[in-house]
Image (cartoon, rainbow, N blue to C red):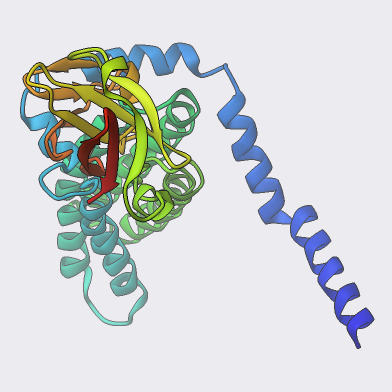
Length: 303
């Protein structure tokens, strides 16, 4: 029985590797590594970053929510369009309701896209490549739904339905690519979430107080976990997790300003006193440590 089970498991694994899902993942991996889109990526990224959004940029990132707002906003257009598709399949005269739902989806697509572009512009090169294809698929889907809406307004219901189903197919592909961004490439995830679970319990020695430069972030370790340590002019010591919650950037290589440390990768700012993210694109605060000095040695304990 064990031999049979082992054979079955091996066959299943081979099938997964050789069939569609394996080929899809291989295609996405190739896209992550491909440099063909880099010119377009850089052009679009510069344009998005140059927009004078001010505090609206943090609003689009979702700092106020504690996690990216883009996944929340996309529920409205996708839900509206899916509901319109269901009405299109049902018997009876429901074309006015379906048309209204398509219109709602089009209106809601704009803020969802704005949030997505804001997040995309502050990501790493492999994510930028995949994200551009994700956005292109969604733009095609929106164009198809816009055509569907116009056809319905003009009374060409059959054409409107056909364009709607085509739009849903393309949007579905775009959503699958978005899932790769979120779950395979971890765009939008909290990259410091594991820190409280990795730091040993109790006080951890992080170094000699006299060896710490004043007002300069340096990397030390609490157990095996990297932390950024800052000695303030009044002799107090502040310790935060070194991995930026946005995309894991090294805060110990960042700069200090107004009691905050700024990530060198994408500019997120965290308050030294408690790790609060006072500026995005980070949407999650930084794990912070209590500190004390014993016999000239700095010790830290996760809060």
